[in-house]
Length: 181
Image 1 (cartoon, rainbow, N blue to C red):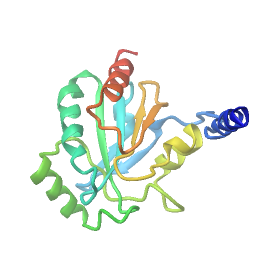
Image 2 (cartoon, one colour):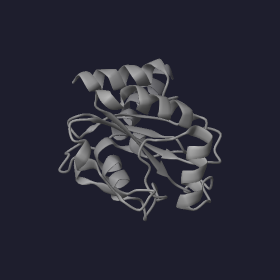
Image 3 (cartoon, rainbow, N blue to C red):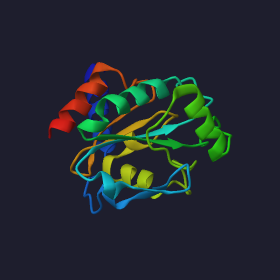
Image 4 (spheres, one colour):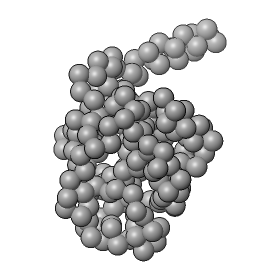
């Protein structure tokens, strides 16, 4: 029975990732900023990019503080943090202005933020479709504060579930390793 369990685990783990052909790199995507401007990932070429879907009314919302610290500590070391507000999990009902005011007032957020968009389903932003196609199921946000790390090569280095804090050793170790690449 133990062997069947182990074989099953191994078998299904091979099906979780799709074949990463990377016909496109992350730098080919753009977002509208929360201010109405443009966030063109091309401007962050050869930097490490942390893309995080965020929400104001989530149990993980205090991670904004860690994300701001990450941005403050590493923005001059080839890292950019991009917050992506979404209401896919019914925890971000506000307008772009409401979201921006909340983030600035409560967490003094200064890293780039996109307008509120979908990260799941038929209306998902093309970046999130690309992430799924190239990295598999682990790139699909299961909840708010899911983190996708793009290496300096424009490909997904890794993803982190909502429960992993941006201040965790495992997260910071990956960021620092990617910055050195």
